[in-house]
Image 1 (tube, rainbow, N blue to C red):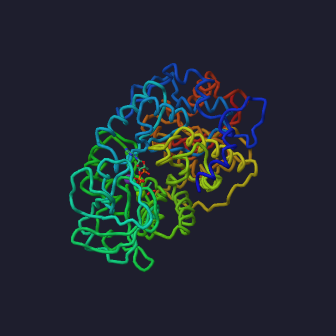
Image 2 (spheres, protein in one colour):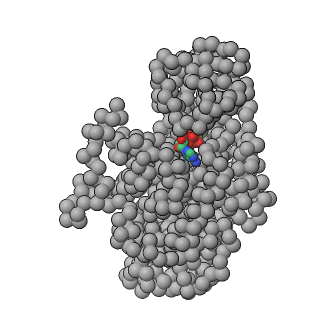
Image 3 (cartoon, rainbow, N blue to C red):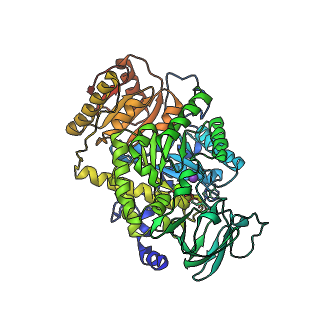
Length: 563
Ligand SMILES: Nc1ncnc2c1ncn2[C@@H]1O[C@H](COP(=O)(O)OP(=O)(O)OP(=O)(O)O)[C@@H](O)[C@H]1O
Ligand SMILES: CC(=O)C(=O)O
Ligand SMILES: [K+]
Ligand SMILES: [Mg+2]
């Protein structure tokens, strides 16, 4: 089916390749990102800024301002009112782990690189981290790194080294906890969970990857479970397994497995040692595990600030949603596994609920999995996929994520271009329609000073919309004020000035923020004047632009024209 869809869609390919400037594209999609590098040779040629991932902040040069090379190009290309607000996360895998491939993704707008610890060795991940660092350092990007834990849910083994296996209708496969030599016997799958044969019953339905392939359990022989394939498809290494009985998920045992396994703790130590920016925790069930991990990180790495992202992908995480998001620094709607745990038709409303709650609680949220699944194999997305991406952008999610599309697909850069183009188009349409959604944003701070900051930010955002200002400026040491502005989803972009490279990288996950590194003082007057002259010198703003500025040093709102 996807073949015929892709063929019938192939004429839309031109939407994503740059037409000559004089010929308008139907949807006015922007040209693909690599052309940015062509138009702004400095992107590839020179060292624009220096960014010290992981290491202590460099002695700041008071005369400089640092901005992500791609952001700078986008600002110049589209004028800053139309820069992209939705952030993009790419899972790095065999298709994208080379330095040049990573650079192409960074040029294409990747804000965060995700490493899935389910796959690859720690050495492999270390190599990727080093390459991203080098890219940031040498080429002026500020790509943040997110480590995603494996979790201890039930999954298949690694297929004895094969990259995939095809299961056909009616075939009998053996699922077993036995250790086999590779290559595995034909039609045999390893299962990581000791209690597997004990727990399943004849007649149970076994879902691989949430239903991409289905089996029916027909016989149990000691540690081996014989299953008949009822929905054929491709089995991928380490795919998740769930089993269903009488139409509902069997999850008693899963509930007993730890959220963070012993292997996950070693991966987390590795992540802390490498100074990753985010750690995403798979299959979170309760807020306690988040609090526990956060205190572990705090004790382990006194001066590094790693954000903990709660992945919402289980029934328990939906039950305890509010307290989990409260405890975490952000959340991910992990639709892959979520769709294997709740009926598929409930996933869209769960997504909307999670996205809204995150915004109310002032936590960044990522919408993940299968956004452009067909692009693993085909160079154009289906219309349904474009509609799905649009919906996530329209919901004002902070970030969209590519999984297999960028990790092992054939068109990682094209998939990223589609996310970029659709985000830009939907964001603009939203602004043109002036559809400010009236979302109630409850107070989130516990201290009076935090409540003042919230009031300042919501007033500043409202003024920015009403006065149609060109940009909001926020001077923030911790990033908190910037997140409060982002939460209001104002019409204009938010220039967030921060003193530390790690804060700047973490702001890269939040909607509408354009993070700059700048050393600033407590004197707002001089901060503003310096910022204006630095930005003007780089043609990022011009005299007459209308700006509203707030800061976490001075509780005030300033409105001014750039001199
Ligand atoms: N580091 C890697 N090495 C090899 N293959 C990878 C790597 N990362 C991802 N992949 C491939 O890309 C596919 C999609 O990636 P993704 O991160 O969504 O993983 P997943 O296994 O589906 O699990 P989950 O996202 O729930 O942790 C994987 O199934 C795997 O085949
Ligand atoms: C991203 C992820 O873990 C999922 O969708 O299941
Ligand atoms: K994972
Ligand atoms: Mg998952």
